[in-house]
Image 1 (tube, rainbow, N blue to C red):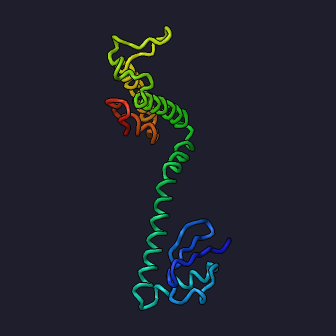
Image 2 (cartoon, rainbow, N blue to C red):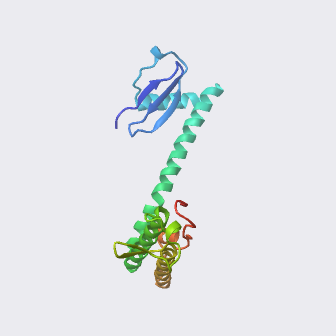
Image 3 (cartoon, one colour):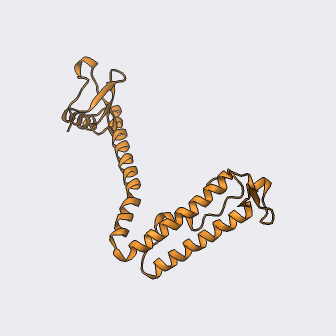
Length: 193
């Protein structure tokens, strides 16, 4: 394991990056010449303990702030990892693998249709809103805004059906499927989530 690298901000405040890159604020009560720029992890830990045990409120506050930052970062890391852990657990169950694949694939289609409505590359919302007035481009029917909304809702219905089948088999909806099954189509282009 490497050593943290510390930068002196003031004579009493150092911002250190741990060997894995996490910034930690450490306050020392001494001069820059009394503390080396590169502190060993043990030295930094000893100083944090001394700060926590000292009667100096600033030192105790620095320890509390550093501990709060570390806990907050750990909670964020746990929150980011949770969906991946859940997916690994779901995919470990052979009976749900096929259901999960179908749900996630269909959710991707719903998401793609949503993004197409947001982008509205052919200005269908303004020029070709009604199903009775589709855009014909070089002899190819590109459809209408309302027609694309209908296709979005149809794709959601297929997704809902996959979720129901998975549920009947004892499998939970995947996070992606759960997210996209109930999102209303955009009311107009550019109006994202």
